[in-house]
Length: 331
Length: 299
Image (tube, rainbow over all chains, first blue to last red; front, side):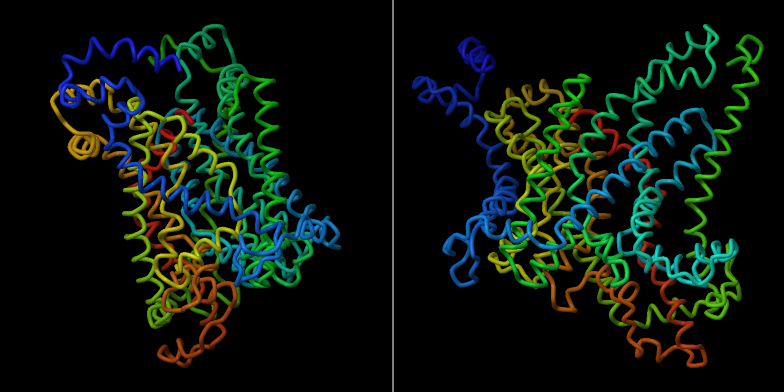
């Protein structure tokens, strides 16, 4: 609003010099500033048209399509023509015997992943920051973020191949320790760990980039004066490096916590097999199986909506807490 | 950093640095070894792989696995499809991202905040799988090549990165001066903004291209026709579902044990499928880093 009024005042003095507005005097006389502003930069709106259309079609129409969760979806009648079902599908989900199991699996894998996956890149960044230069630092960086570019399908294949009894490298390693011929992928209790640790393997290096960037922005004078005061390296990390990483860490933590319920479908779905299903079935895989494979659109959408709402509540509350405790937040 | 005047490192510090090196070496080994193992296995003989003789270096060098991979018609189709989706998809991605990112960076755009909110909401909330699927279905995109391109035509995160870049590198004064000279907004984009934005365009192209090459989810839910399948779906069928077509190995030397070759094929396939990305990786690595850093500047 303040911008709008200040524009109003400066506009007349600018106008005589401005050829664009000279060309269109009638609009100016009507005094409708908003229309004039839009008209003056109509080309920007033209450029915006396609992407905004994209957002509406592929992001906003699906949001409106959520009503399907409250309807008895009928293919012929379509989403809007189908009869209302109320909260029937939500009750159906809450009452299903596996409801708590899927919630438990989703939250369990998520928090396990967060506890391990969140600090790992920070640790790597802090360690890399201690090495000023040289080939070693570059090689560690380059090798550590190479796995980021491996596709999920390949990643899961690598996991499976390495865990194949007798043949895979990890299996052979465990064989030397006396654990022979184990089908790791078939043990329900190991699923979480395999999922989370392979994620750490794949994403820690890439995740460290943002923290390395933050560390490289630290004022060198701080290090100089710490040195003069006789600070040890550990003290420098504790009192200079870590405090300077806090703002970006808080943002990353909020983003991660805001994704707790949105546990990646792709990797888990690919890692599932009949033997580990009791620990590997999460809400997103269940939604896919019930909805698209089982064609229960409404029921599946209800589960998805429940999931999204929990997730949104988490994101908003974590952001609120972060804003209260530190001054860093997403908005 | 002259040695004479610098304050000397204490014993504790030197020990600490030693542990840092030890830690990072461990990281290096843990990340690199599985990759080397796959590579070595892919060029070892099936017998050596199955009997577990391969550790770090190839045993009984052979290219049979690769021969089997290239003889498989499915893989060839998948490769070409993925190439198509990557090229066409990336061009559309980059164009739309600039078309949204640039106006959002302009203070002269009335309603800028509205469009920004419109964009950011989509990051936090979405309709979920079923409504998304139904939209694509209602548009009659199922089982067409467009299903791999249009639903993901824009990355919200990339738009924000692009917008930040435009805001920080293209001064408002430049646009004002151009406007005074009678330059239209569209012409300004083509003759000033695009040439000045080569770094961000490169970064976006790479990120989108890798995304398309590795994409698998949209193909899984939208495509049924095998001749439209991208490489990732074919890989999943072979590597994870274990449905190796026996006929694909007919051309390769029959002497090899079928089972052994099947295992070998997996390693070779992993290498072949990852090759395009991993080959360009060292050249584009620093651009990726730049992209992440631009993105981290401001949300």
